[in-house]
Length: 255
Image (cartoon, rainbow, N blue to C red):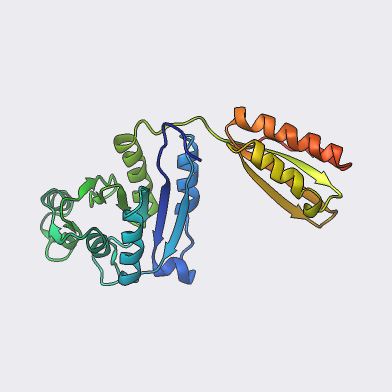
């Protein structure tokens, strides 16, 4: 759901064979969701990808053709299994070049030991912007509205904060809320007409229905969106459920 201060979708790529194989557990997705929520924003989509250059190129090319702002985690190192820098360049249709500013940061951190290998991490898509790394000064980078961070959370998360503060400082919105009731004894099919009416009459809210069979048959039925839009919608759900002859209780509001 968009607002005037957040007019574009936000996406995330989480990259690495180690995530898909289970060798490491991803923590980025939950952190991005929480970081955006603190600004009243929401993630529109997320995709897990392995270290497969051709697949990375395809997915990056697709997202670069959209109007999404994207945060990508992982695969920007200098080892042979890291493909994100090269894939970003190919997707953007530009060559990889050694970035003088990135070289300066790496040399300042590592001195002579920046050569011959660490400096490879300064090979970035042409005209890429730099994202400062507060831990070891090896920068991330951005190409248009796509932002590329290392896979290490202690580096990536402060870099994400920097991007939001410096590139999108105006991106703050009224936080969304989730308002719900727990309905007892009803099946979803018995409430579909009501749900369709609420969706039709309250299009600014997103409706959800989560049934459960144990320990008793219940449905968590609610809406998510701005409070001013959702209060009338949840009232309509409450009234409709009562009119249908089913018991319900209001659940605690959630952000």
